[in-house]
Length: 549
Image 1 (cartoon, rainbow, N blue to C red):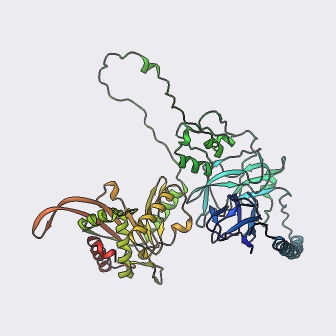
Image 2: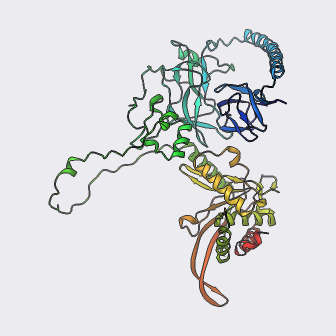
Image 3: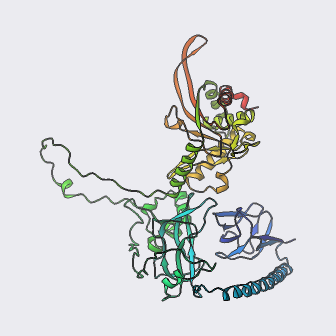
């Protein structure tokens, strides 16, 4: 029997989705677990897999089209099956909804008309066909956005679906596409500038529209624009980048403009984007540029006249002379959010620190034996994460959150693992860590860390931690302290394993030790509680067999 596939709700705030790409065509065989399509939500573009087997009989939403959650996305059934009744039922339902919506809209229009007739403010409405584009909310925590790059200039024609700009949020840099067609009449936020969500980003409409009148008119919500100064209309060619399409996209250290798909394919093929020529708007690298790229030998830089000249006799030693210089680099949204949250944590939570030294001899021997098993790879960090999860179950006071009048005791254990990325730090979360074995922890950390560095993590994968582990041991750092990742009550800082003389049974022998430091919020975790947690943690690490039970 045929199954109707509806537009899924892929995030908590998603109200509609856009089909970015279909990976199956009508008539194709579909297995359970096959990826049907890539769906663009309000937060990210995600793969959507089929939960049914059969033949793809119908596609209800074409590539590039958007539709509300629960709209007809596709139908899967047996080859040759009659689905007319399903389609007619959908059509009938849609018609009824449209009729109902029409009645509601008529009532709303009537009410609005009455309200407007009594409104003597004298403000003009936005002309028909003109659209005011606002700074979008591209993530659930986004409060402001930075325009990383404009891909259209004032005066350019814009089609629905064209990429207008790249917008940097607190989590990632995302492409923002236009949902309207027309001429780009006005740019409200320049490249590199930041503005709050819902600030005027751009205006699209017919050529010749009086932009000043639009910006001073009532918006569609009936609120007057609060901006007191608006830049004058720019000429179509003002600030339009001149890009030589035959030259590489970037060879001077500047930002490389490329579509997300092009970046992914380039990363998979190991292609350096700086050596690829872009054929998209303003020299932007697109999919076909990567597919058509042929590696060639790097051209040597021309030798200067000085280097080509014969070596001169050694000159007398003189003191260096030069100009002092510096460069102001605008902080990314991620860096600003990190600074804000860590400052709030440091200055609101009374931190204290406890350090303990762990004998890692048994852990090293156990890890060696575990990694000799087929398809098994466990790191020392995986062992630390597992030991923390088990210790948290024994010391629930450390697995808490301060809520002012109350303290929340988390009965689940979600351990966050700090991962360094180019622009800062992210903390992917291992859900229900206490129920995972060492192999599962190792595979999950590797997957999450890899996707974190490629900016492929979803917001849900970075939320909900109850405790955090930060490890700098791989950089040779012996001991350090971390700032608590709120709303956690504690964070563990893990140093390097050091070979040093230790005393065992009254004898000085060579040992391998590791220092770990627990930062605690004194509002929820007392000193004795933190110390007991560390003793339990050390017992697990010094006797790894207890973590395998």
